[in-house]
Image (cartoon, rainbow, N blue to C red; front, side, top):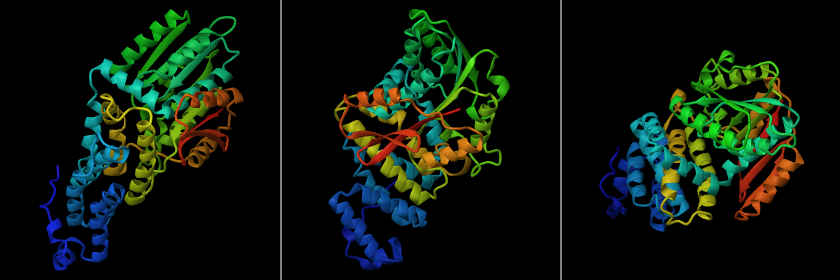
Length: 405
């Protein structure tokens, strides 16, 4: 871990020291940073630090890091909390430890019950998760309304929480529930718990249910792993996962497009896509840092108005569910950068090139989500854009959701 340089604020009038040791080019820029620090302008100092790193001005970057350590706080205002994780990313970038930090954050999950409670709380206070799952489930339910045998492939099933509401919805279908089979792709140790949880739920609601576990990385999945059967209507779910697959900018294999072509070859009845509306895939470091700062500021602010700042679990939610992505985006490059968001227009291009055509979301789905918004802060807004449903906070779109066939 990099340590802050000795305090040099007292040397503020020593222009020779600054000119030759800190900022060889323009002392005016340094004066602006000092002024931002004195005003407590955390965003400005974060950007200045990132700019110094991008220009390989390591002495200035280390000095900024020392100042930033006194400005951030995981229990402070939204920008202070986000700043703490962005600072961790900047330090990791300088020390080339981003990949190991990301892996440790991913694996540093608390006991299963605690982690599930953090995920549940995040889904409650950060509406974009609930929005994504509701819109995807609505598209699947609409496409499968007349089907008796349904197979859903979830390419990143996580804790399986998305399917609780859909199983309950199918249980209430006039004429009885259909036969449902879910193929869950993910970590083998988690899949056992997901199977148990969903089977228990289905039994409670008298829904014929089977679970097929695929313990593998999504980019390594092949058709034979998916157990697709004749006579079952197929739905495929890509909720917050395609941005984890490397594309042509990372690997000649281009798993992002390969998986889409593979899914199209299965002739699914519906494919759902839910993704953050954020552009961090191929952007150089500094523009990517600015985009991350803008996007996650909106997210942390939206959490702040719902969850009291002194809520004892809020820190756990942000640390265990959000911090790892922020660090990875900032600290890593190449194959080590796992989190690579793209904008809706790029996703539409990828789906079209794979042979998909849009499957319009029904007005019922839109109306249901608009009704949900009434229970949340009016900073949230929803709009239909380019055939997708988009959820935003204030003036920033956070998530887009659409369906294909």
